[in-house]
Length: 163
Image 1 (cartoon, rainbow, N blue to C red):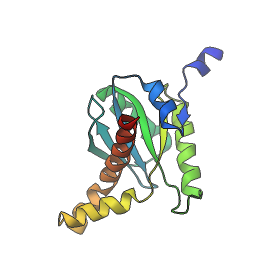
Image 2: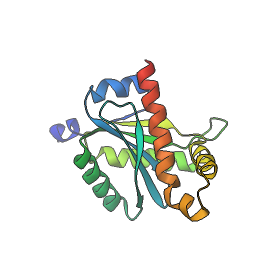
Image 3: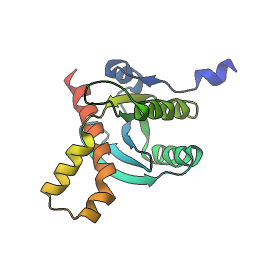
Image 4: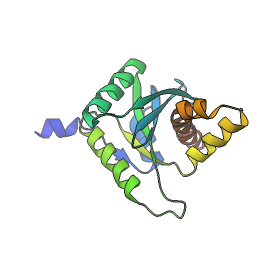
């Protein structure tokens, strides 16, 4: 049992600690975890640019995690950046609790570290970007979650480079 615990992942709230765990190689996946979808973004290998990847329609956690792990393996991921939906005033609510539970459950399945990243206004920023690009309502609905994940991941990438 001790060996099993050693292979489990860990969730970090502090970017410096997370950066120390992921090393210098490997892409990162950004996740915008909603109740109905998981928006995913992928960093480049230099961890400079985040790009939209895919939107997964949520099923049961086990199925969602299996697909997420398949994607992580396919892209050589070294860690996850999971958007933490903190309220504008900095307080936490049910969505933060659900996100932390998602991270804890994912940690039980993979040794890959997870960074919880403040995602305040990421979906609103994604919506503004899509409206400015004159995207139709239907198109916005199809891509907003992966664009929000891109904004979340890009924010973390920028902060890691600034340190």
